[in-house]
Length: 232
Ligand SMILES: Nc1ncnc2c1ncn2[C@@H]1O[C@H](COP(=O)(O)OP(=O)(O)O)[C@@H](O)[C@H]1O
Ligand SMILES: [Mg+2]
Image (cartoon, rainbow, N blue to C red; front, side, top):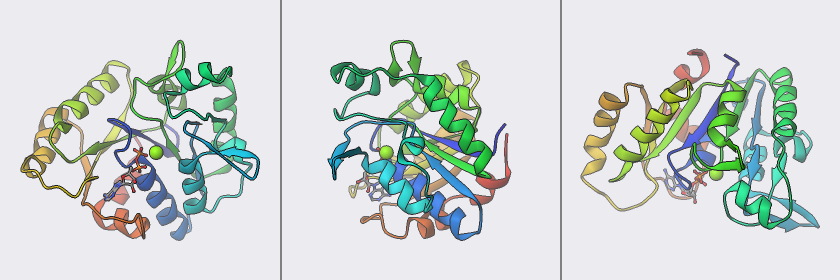
């Protein structure tokens, strides 16, 4: 296994980006030569005549890396849809080879690489290549980011089940509270997910508005040592 992590969500909007960014800044501050990658991003916007994605920009800001944008984010699409769908609408074709070439350059260059996936495992990148296939090709240990609220048991266990069937190695789960509302399921979810999922819970992050000091947040609520040293 390579040094790094592939961050996948049970869904979109679960906190992959702020956690990936927080880890990147924390590792950077610890003096680790950390790189980031967002292989495919959708919902991009033009800035100064260049199409860019807000996840990629956040990851660049947090990690402070200075690589060419197209190596950090090989594919950026405008439609806020699954990559395959957006690419089709925009008359573009996604080649996994291009993503994996950038990835290999980064694994050579950086001591620890944080890759943010796009939605969940079964999001199509091309007609025959899903996010979970990309995770498999990258051979990085996987962190699953899951919501804290009601419904997360099913989403998380389905994700873990898919990982197991596909031979993907899951390092653990980070449970993240993305909404202000409190539900009684939040108290029992971590234990149930741990019991049925049979993978470690790496952390439970409370609702913290403003995405400020995410390095401090991940350091406080996540088992950083397991992520850094427990390569599986
Ligand atoms: N623990 C949290 N507390 C408050 N807001 C959060 C938390 N985690 C995520 N958010 C917010 O939820 C939204 C989705 O998070 P993001 O990291 O972009 O998710 P993803 O990358 O999985 O789509 C963002 O606006 C983010 O600031
Ligand atoms: Mg994101």
